[in-house]
Length: 211
Image (cartoon, rainbow, N blue to C red; front, side, top):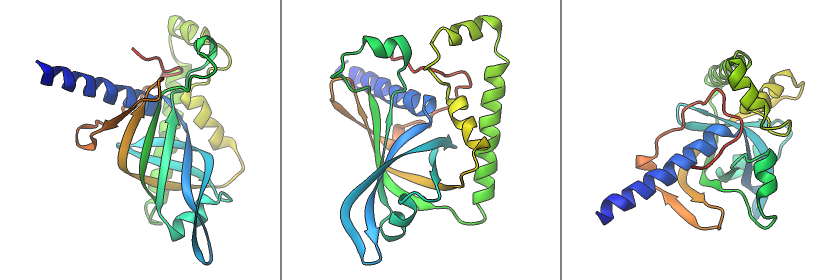
């Protein structure tokens, strides 16, 4: 009975991780600062966009971001994705409370030149499909989404803005080595990667809510 309960808790935590990753589009990427003499053993952090493609996070990083230089010397990195809680729900949280998040460590890898256009086109098509699905939602669904408030942007809206920007981006692959779920209380829950199912696209996801 105890074993079954432990498995149930593990599945619940894994489900929350999938929800956070599927609902979000922004993450904090950390890499080791580097220069022409090698690693400085200092951490550089910036916010980047990401998408999950076939279970793998792909990072959309501006060309002028230092991450592109850092990973040439040291590919190690970590990625933190916070639960995108917005609007009225966020206002109910205590200021001291940090939203639940998924923290991953792994390697930040450059794509082979032959794979870049394939991944880029796939991400573009996914963004357009999600935006189209949201725009064609029924009146009832649209009303529910709208009631979330103007500050609650959908994942597709956040990513769609990238397609119209003039800035150039590099697409980097994040090869996950470990994954941890951190709850409202700051408690960490390790996720077994062997049993971690990749998140599925939720075309109408706007605000992540825990159940």
